[in-house]
Length: 148
Length: 401
Image (cartoon, rainbow over all chains, first blue to last red; front, side, top):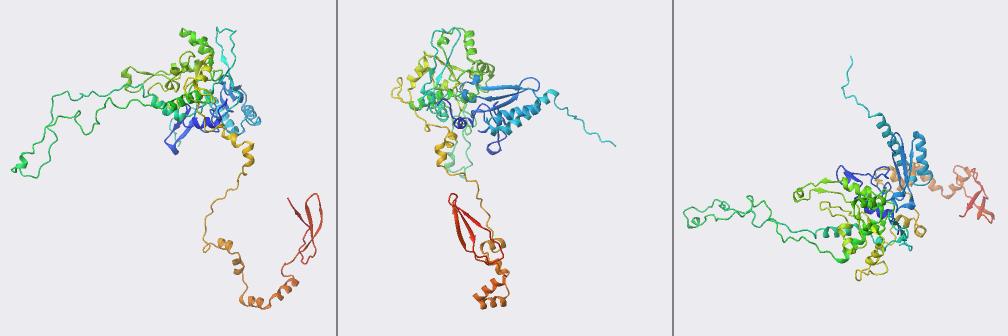
């Protein structure tokens, strides 16, 4: 077959891959994350995996300012990583960007199961961009003065 | 396996003659060999031991001194010093062992340790085929950590102009054209100092592995060495899923791969009597199988109501369960006093009729007559003939599904 089925790839990849991050203990105590770009929750699971799925969604910071890049993979181009992604950079208000994400992910029936993840990630990325723009919160480390 | 083998385009390079046909090359069957990371891991671990050179501690180590020890101090003997036995219990003189704390150290290492491992030919070939197959899957190559975002196509085949490259600069140019530069750069930037003592043996630096370039004109056996393919070549890296990054294969080579490994139908020309192993599952796409029409037709509907185990409660203590088991008990509790009960029993069936006429109880019988059925509907209309009770019984419709 030209393409290897997702479940097969997942079986090979789930325990060990370059993006896997395991922290805080062993077995049940452990958290497993995945640093792939196409993983919306960054969680190491089949549903969210960017490696094992044919259709994935990526939401990342798009460059300078508050632009966010959203990319989806094209199903027909699995063998061509160079032209795999449908990439678009958005620089709009949050509501409009959310709508774009919804369109791409849900209304197209692309990956409706990733709706919540996509929106969550959009919020997270957007917020982090805002923070980086305005600087991290300056925390006043002085002790609170009690007024008489 | 798909009947039509997808074509792989050969990446043109600068200086390649436009006249040469760059038609797509059909994928060799090796690349559809089953992917067995467990087999690859096993074979790789074994094969990577085969280039080891024996080493051991010198057999004279620790012995090249003239010192002697007094031996192990003897326990105080219960025999009196005057007895003849005591006179002969002088402690023996024993040369010291290699280290002072002889009991603690392990025995010295020997050169005849089993350094090399033999692996069966078939498993070796299986592993190579597997690794090759995995190298053609972009997800797996990505998972191994290679930078393949700019690679135009997987299975990366490059025209044979690349073979004639003499200078590094032109080699880099080729990599650029093929989108392999990010990976090579990652390898170059990853130079690090090796942790551990091997630094002292001139293996001070470690690198990540970049792309593996396989030339078409080199005898295949040396090129597709599993240790290279599986890229665990750097010793300290016990890379578990050691998949071959990707090869830049040359035009003339793909037919070679076929001749080397054979197809699923034909046996290999180069390897005597070797036929590619088939995978256990012809179609490994589980979700597709499960959701396919053939399976769904036969499958029972999903059981959505979950039967949970209910805690058993003791009816002797718990009134509710008692009533569930014995519903008459409820009535028995609201029992008539004994005299009334006796009176009812005495009255017998006659009482029944008086009860009805008194309309104290709503006991009624309804008999039905069937009216015409509307033939199309399979419905039967039914009406009560006698209504003996104040309850109004509506027309009842019996429907068959």
